[in-house]
Length: 120
Image 1 (cartoon, one colour):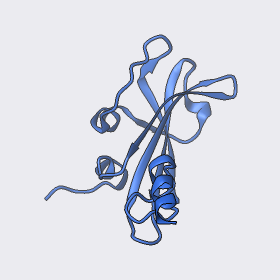
Image 2 (cartoon, rainbow, N blue to C red):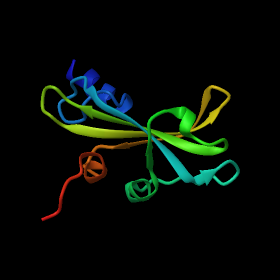
Image 3 (cartoon, one colour):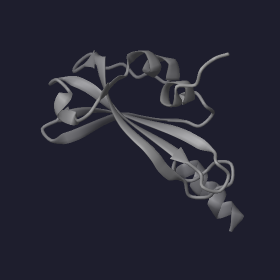
């Protein structure tokens, strides 16, 4: 049974990579990506890019036509407390979301952005 839980945590982002328990979504936010427009999309893997370019918005209707957006999900394990951040980059097209990229950060790469951690 432990092997099955470990496989789930590698395949499904809702399972904790530390203890393999199912994690809860504790925060969900929506952002615009003003630097990315139709025909000019570039994949980025680095958390720093998103920290610099995400602009918080309240709803999809605030995203101008042709601009990409990003849904941010914070997962937390109720068992061990481990947190992870998932970013889903998409282009809103006629009431649909054309998915471009999904990123999963589980080593604290987005913590300062999401939680406003102060240095020193």
